[in-house]
Length: 180
Ligand code: ABN
Image (cartoon, rainbow, N blue to C red; front, top):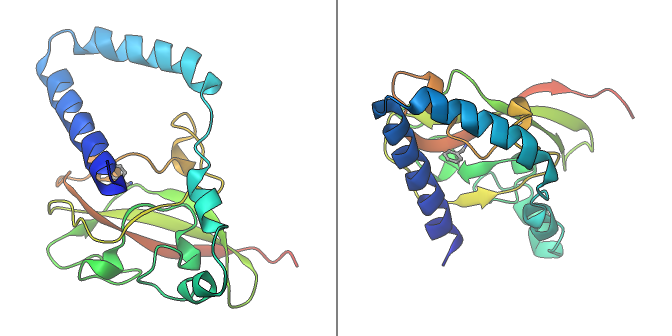
């Protein structure tokens, strides 16, 4: 199964589960159970470090990709899980037309290849169209499981928007570390 197929599987599963929960009178009990079970089990689960390992894998070619906004390896994408908006008719910071930025987001801290500084990057999902399905990327530097929501990337952040359909993800710099 390709990475894209796996991602679409997870995406579809989540939507179906969510629809089922919303339509069931037992959803409150189910949610409570999920929270209790999740609280007990999640801390025991291993972190997925595969994206990081993949990021560290390349040589000269990946150095060039680190400066290419249309490549998964672009330096700002160090904690991005989703489709790059640069491949979907948008830009690094602009959602494609017909979509709007998610009202909530997750953040990552990525080292710039230009000046070596650490930047705080806000990843906003773009919402309102079906999944773009181009340039699927999954990097997880400093990413944490769902109980640390602000640094959790494996969720559809369009959930707080009126249009909840996920299309792609932009990465916006919101801060810089002045540590040397
Ligand atoms: N935050 C990107 C994303 C969207 C939908 C499902 C998983 C991950």
